[in-house]
Amino acid sequence: MMEDRSQGQVQEQARPEGAGGEAGLYVYCIGPALGGGCCGVTGIEGREVDAVVHRGLSALVHPCPVQPYQTANLEVTASWVQAHHRVVEAAWKQWGTVLPLSFNTIIRPEGGLSAADALRMWLEHEEGALQAKLDALRGKAEYSFQVFWDPVVIGRQVAEASPDVKRLEEEVQSKPRGLAYMYRQRLEKLLREGMEARAAQECRELYGRVARCAERVHVSRPKEGQEGQVMLLNLSCLVSTGMVAALEAEADGLSGREGFSVRFVGPFPPYSFC
Amino acid sequence: MEYRGAPQATLVDLLDRVLERGLVLDADIVICLAGVPLIGLRLRAALAGMETMTKYGLMQDWDREVRAGAQSLQKGAALLAGQAVQPGLH
Image (cartoon, rainbow over all chains, first blue to last red; front, side, top):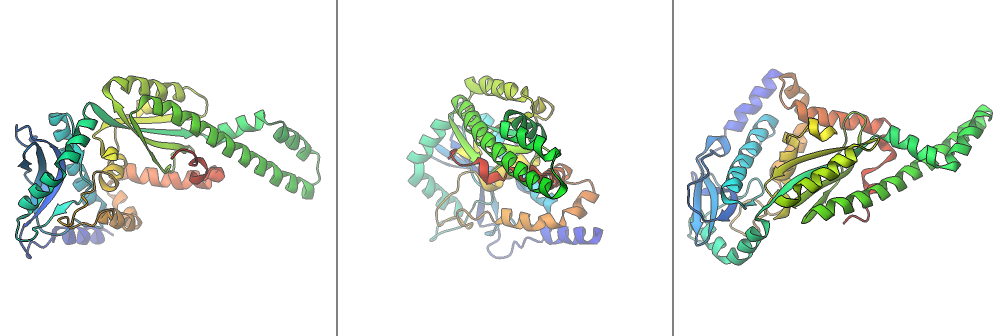
């Protein structure tokens, strides 16, 4: 097993630099051209980060071969992703607004232009739209707001609130085995429907409460929860500085409800809102 | 009050955002095609090899989340398919 891993690592390092050397540019993020250097952090694999500046915009980059970063090694992936994030976050703190680029955005030389010139041309072409986005994101941050419930606790609540479930539960006690099985099936179906209805209702209400605190909300598919918890809502929220406390209060209030918990994490640069 | 105990961003929070979101530079000067997170695809393939990595204490948070997820699904949490709660939110 150990050999597998070290082999994997050897393959990772072997990113050929042959064809074209480092004619490409890995782009981390775009922001306003403010001067003041490149945020003082190193990039992926310790690379020094440069700024490509064009008029009012700058892009943080490092030179790289004209091919994507790829690996099957999670440890290497984690270090790349953390490095990308480190640069974006430092830029965000320095600039007050940023457009993070998706991982593995690599510019290649195009039509006789170097990658840097191709990037400048793109910045010029997109200047208006990019500036508008940067302005819209100023003073705002992204927060993750994930709501979980405990299906055992909620299931009990649903059962207690439903006269039909209660009646069936009582009847099932007095039935012979064969019939009791059928009753139990009906009971499960009833409970499942009750919980689905409850989930839909909670999601609508919670989404509404969260959305009132946020400029924008990005809904992701719920992930699997931990320790018996089920994720009900997986939201990313773009929140103005002045509204963070309100959103935190929502998280607080919800966590105080029986059977519910919230994971409220941030701030992140606005990855989900550009 | 769970979030008070776990206010830190995890690697999974970062992976979700850095790999799958962010501005997609949709121009032919970019070598990665828009909307194709190459690394994301490779990552999912690599999940199978995770057992090896956790032996060395790497990626434990990640692993815990994935495993706990699988367990909670088995434990009748299947009552709630992820899809069932989504309609009406988009």
